[in-house]
Length: 280
Length: 280
DNA sequence: GTTCCGCATGAATCGATAG
DNA sequence: ACTATCGATTCATGCGGAA
Image 1 (cartoon, rainbow over the protein chains, first blue to last red):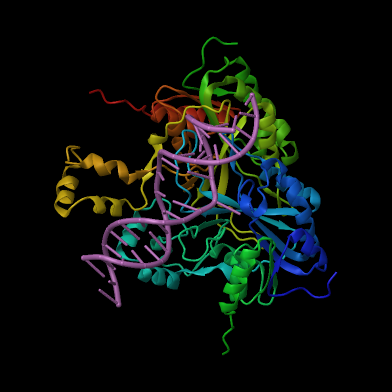
Image 2 (cartoon, each protein chain N blue to C red):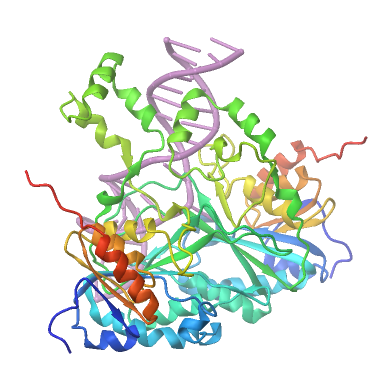
């Protein structure tokens, strides 16, 4: 058991092992997107859907131990289609996590505006993922004001940045919720968020593709932590969670088994500046 | 066992009892929004979340029997928060329905664009519900073209393929359907939808607490049936499903235990016209 | 400097083909 | 019969070069 947390670093190894050295009740927010069943097989050896719960539970046991009683665990995950059916391993995982001692507080929906294309006789494109919120206690830290958006200024800023074609495109889009449909927000000062998030994946980014867009962890970090709080991502990948955590002036800990990802994340993190609060 | 289905009528009673008189494999689509746990307690005697699965399974057993092998069962449901947690009865219901013989084909998300306003210390407004798709067989009827939506950048796509003069000429003739080369790009301005539906709730219906907007059943009726197919709603309430079913030229069967709702639904249905296909 | 347009790129899924 | 691999399908996004 180590005395101090390895703050602001990316650790190389299996989170199940490495977390055993962490002290109890020391993390404010755990947010992660673990490898989905049968995905990323080159990295994680391809956990099969049927084995997924057994693979995950020892890890989440450590998450439960290191999380503060006021902390939150956000799990981004989505089940795949197997033999024409949705597999049930995510449902079983939720039930198992509750038996492990977690409270299943909420399920946020991440609406992926640019879902993977394709056509099949029996289903449409899969355009959403689960962001499951778990807690240790019924009372936890939540800073709702931090994610309220000042819509007036925001609308003007967005409008200015849009090309004409983008404006046409967006007004024609049926599913313009949180996105660029500015007209929804005219005359409003603040928007109360809901439990549905509308974000596009960053698929054709110049950077290495991440599991989720940075706006996703950003939103949860703002919502569940304040400055200098500690945010852990036990499957940090190319470092998206750590990067936005640092940018927001919180302290990050990332864990990753793939060495190449570790180096990549550390490389980017040295270039990232941390948020400095303005002095009056 | 009755010989013929009670087509285009609203039956008064408990669907579990009434369906026992229905023949096997006779319904093309079952779509329903059952009373949620602990809701509408005056109507259904207050099903508690812990008893919900046991309450539901005998009914779904009849659904399974009366549904055609090519048919679909759409279940609109959302778990409530109990003691600060999301209750797990919907997850358990999915697992139980699979054991009963259903295939859990898909989970659509209904994003409620204007969700009920409110603010709580530990959660945001709940602005989505599950629309669970179950089937008897892996092959089922699905008419995807019936629900295609305008493409995201339809304006861009059209402009790309046409010269300016062609644009003017063709757009002026679109209504008559005789434009030149129209077929080249007309097909491109529509895309298949995803498994996320963006629909506003209709606040107008004050009596029926579990009512969904007519656009929701409309979408599924178009997607899973053709004209003259039989659509059943075993918890039809004030009749939304039956009404849109009739309007779309399909045949409806509604079941409702509350007599007042039955009368209300029948009253509206007499005024509703059925879709008439145009003859050449 | 703008705006416009081509193009690669995805946490996908199914069905056919091969071992 | 059962598993592994592969091609076909499809569309929102953002980058970069062109106009």
